[in-house]
Length: 159
Image (cartoon, rainbow, N blue to C red; front, side, top):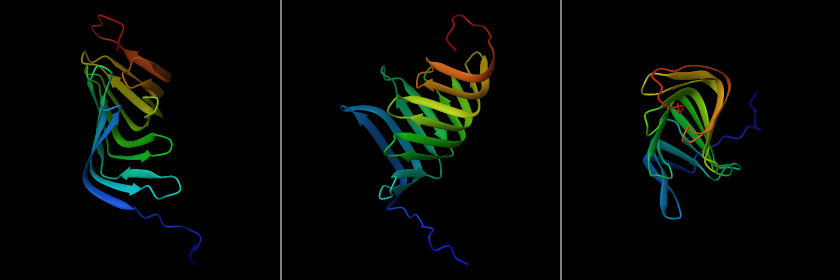
């Protein structure tokens, strides 16, 4: 028996090799690169899906570049939330690396969060890992729920 009440969702547009720049007051805030983008902006809750991975460059207030990579992503237009999934990796301009399997990014507040296992390492191979974390795009404000850390050759308190 067929389920006739189930609606199929079809993209209103498909883009190959997408390069999107996000600006605010004529200042570039981020750049997104994707092999494929599926546009569902005519859906009840509009979104764009990137099924073959994304690479994002986020510029901070000092124009430093912070990089985000994921196997796939979904960006929800109304909420400004981006859902990053699969081998998510953030590399900050100062060499910190954060890795997890799923990560949300709140574009309006420049805030990342996950309930998954994460690991943050710095260039000295110090690490900080655990389950569940949220933080600002510059790794300055961090709230981690269950974590542990090992610090090596620390000259200041910033990890």
